[in-house]
Length: 274
Image (cartoon, rainbow, N blue to C red; front, side, top):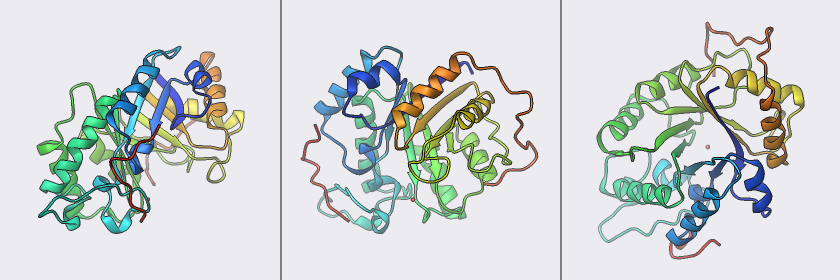
């Protein structure tokens, strides 16, 4: 692994400790209730003072990635006169979506992000219409800043093989959990993004053997970001980073290279999150 970053979602209360340990931060607050620019810029300043180089990931607003009926909380978009909620979400080429996407990119720049994570819901199915919309978005109007890259985490019925090929064709990074089924082949890509929600269910922690498996999976890529969303996410990140210091690939560890198998409370956008 030429590049290896590890951290957790959203800033913990013990920020000083976090910035002494972690090397990645995934701002999931962007998914629900994006803060004002001055708050994001203050977070970027904090990250710049971290002990190690910090990779910052901004999670795109649900108002862009989801259809309105799929948004569970923090909708937060005030429609302008003449706009329709039907034109939001699922990468539709509409004025409403373009306006929201411009806000997302601005938020990502303000927080110092080098990755924007697009989490699509289960209702963004692998249909031809959705595939064309995603490809059109990336090719025609995403206009991602030069120092950023898109990460895609598809929920629902997407097969990993197909999602990986689409991500590769569009020069996106695919977000996966490499331990969901260790018989699945890993994507043939230069970079990967591991979202670790727990070995045996949401928030469950990982054993040292689990962490070794994560490192073995990470060794297949040139660039890896590992984000823990567990009960002790910072502790898991600290343990994985410690293990990575003396990591030696396991000779008996092997993924199958033959086959792949393989998510409404309104928010006032003028509110602050401190």
